[in-house]
Length: 300
Image 1: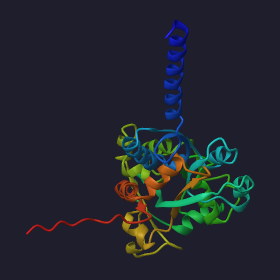
Image 2: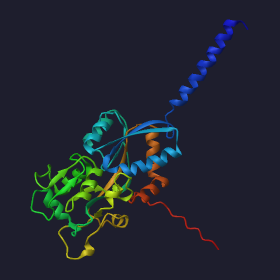
Image 3: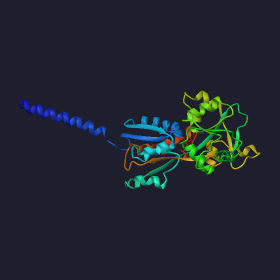
Image 4: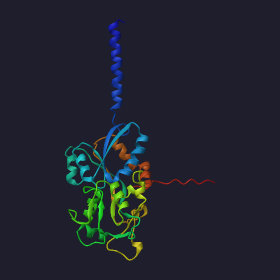
């Protein structure tokens, strides 16, 4: 074989090798490839837990995650820059048209039920509120609540309580908005008498940056309707009271998948909705969409 043919053969071999590597790196299916998630900031802890286990099981999936308040989150999902979102609601018919016009099927998966927690300083003697206390404050009326501190004016928790009170805007008095859930937790921990609104998953397994602050808090009991004299009418966002529907401030959590075909976003959705993902939800303190089976081993 002459020299030119040798170089030609080696060239083909090198090109084939790099072509195979490129082909392998660009495979997109349920357990390979890259995807991006945009996540409601109030749900960050549970999604971080899910991703930690998912990527340890499927190391060939690369997931980049963006945490945003609900209103900002939608800007990414509805401009096609990110096609998988984690939200505390489904898309409205008007929002869904964006993908329907592209003939892309939107797959919606409920994976958990969350309780919006009202928190106060551990030294606050009053730890009970009624649903109407919240509604009155949101409507600008006299209320037993003097101030309510939210994570962000564009957050899903603000939207939830606005819908509960049937108002389109926040009152000028008694409502304060910071930027994040950790900021609310830190504020309430250092300001006795204040009441904060956070997703309960921030309190169940707090990271090191807020764990000391969480120790200075207590979750308030909430009753439906007006205040009750019977303390047993007040409930907290525990798994049992979420399951029984006793806690008034409950919301569903969803994965919104607009990939339009097989991809790692669909793989992550299936993982979260599957037995292993639902066990992670159960451990987090939220209520899983489907309770994982429990194996009982009987030894004779």
